[in-house]
Image (cartoon, helix red, strand yellow):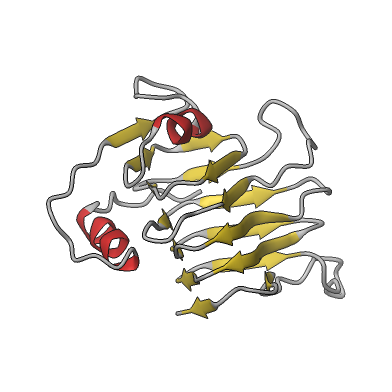
Amino acid sequence: MPATAPRPLVPILAVLALAAGAAPTSAQFTVWTVDDDSAADFAELQDAVDAAAPFDVIVLQPGAYGETVVDGKGLTIVAPGSALVVPGATAPGSGAAPLTVRNLPAGQSVVLDGFTVFNGFPGPEAALLVEDCAGPVWVQDVFIDAYGTQAVRARNASSLVLVDTLAQTNLGAAAPDGTPQPLPGVELLAGTAGYGY
């Protein structure tokens, strides 16, 4: 993956506050760092998600991280460099989506910004699964690449916003040379409002 310049967190935090329906304030939150190969608060993304309180920020350093579930709390997960969320870090082909956001209460939001979600195994429902969320899920500058499954699937989500995000899947026809054709790969099921910018 190409190196990118670090991006400031301030615009992301403002987006989080606005998406949650609040004006940006000096609200209390903790910033956690995750790095799979050096000193940080956590080595695994799931451990950081489990430890974080609602409205906390998780900063992913460059590296590869296993499948992760954000369940029942609003968080910001941002990667100022190159980070990859991929299933099978410990159990290849487990059938779990690389990244799941579910049971988000109203008044909270999840912001995903600046990393790649990749699924290379058949079995998961999607590479990014969003379900049963009363608060908004904002996906910005994320590349979602899925083989054998949908790239993004949302069900019963009050608001899914995709900004500068590429979601592709190989579920379509192949090119004459056998290369899978990239498709939008986003499926919004019953009860979901989706927006793309």
